Image 1 (tube, rainbow, N blue to C red):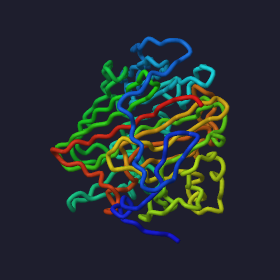
Image 2: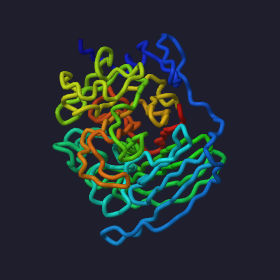
Image 3: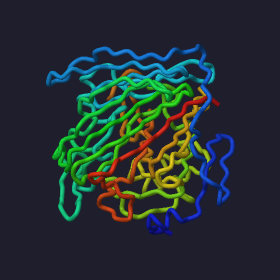
Image 4: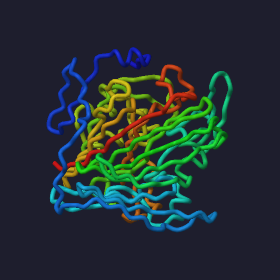
Length: 402
């Protein structure tokens, strides 16, 4: 039976709490959520790595703006490449169980491909990640309109969201690790959003083979803000096949169903007994094509907001993904209340990138976030940001082998 729950009722409900251990996922009620440790022992890559950062040119945009690429290697051996256009992570290398490194994210080697692509590969997403119904929302009774770019709705900030902007980039090297700081001022009225929004996002690689995203923002007028990162993952390696054999577990007992435009209906439903139940690890492909389920049929697979079992704002366990052949294991921790799990439903082989042609179900995305269309749903966690407040969010992707 469909159940409507308020956010307060949802937080008060006794739900499953996960361990981040792959081999055991306890379901005892009353357990304290597993929090992310402040310090982690360094991983042991096949060869000791010396942290390094190099800046090179990645070309010019069609309107003549220079774009740089930053190659960053962490002390644990991980390596990533980031371009100043869209804050895009073009490549991300992690080891398998034999110490062999491979790029596990979808991307291109040409700037022109990013300019024309609409799949948001590796991009920094804003001002509002995910969807806004009909591009319309109200703040203090005043109505605002963002550009329509997804059917009759707004997706990922509009026609020229943060993924299409040039970011200021500075190197970071501190006790946490090595990476880059991306900053820009999103001016009032950009893509219809009010307020001048000053944004800062850190991408950091740690000695423990973690990729950390730290987001912060301030505004001079009331606005909405929901930032995320749109990496596409395939733990086999980019372009190396389907992700349907990946094992997944998501620390969620509820999700938000959607209409045909993938806008939340406003309901909050239990995952119990549905294809959306990942409380116990299972292969992504087990139910991803189960068209007898209305929500799978509407989404073409998984393209839904999962509500995380965690205290609001606490950095704690969200999910893990494991690829048995390579042994690669990705654990996700976040301060966000929810995550959009997307099973590569719209990939069709037409995009040809660093890993070849990106086929249907050739990658998944796991975007930590507030709920889609929150400004239009009073019972969803608020994304309203006012002057004097600070938007703050953190997500960690930790890579191990099993």
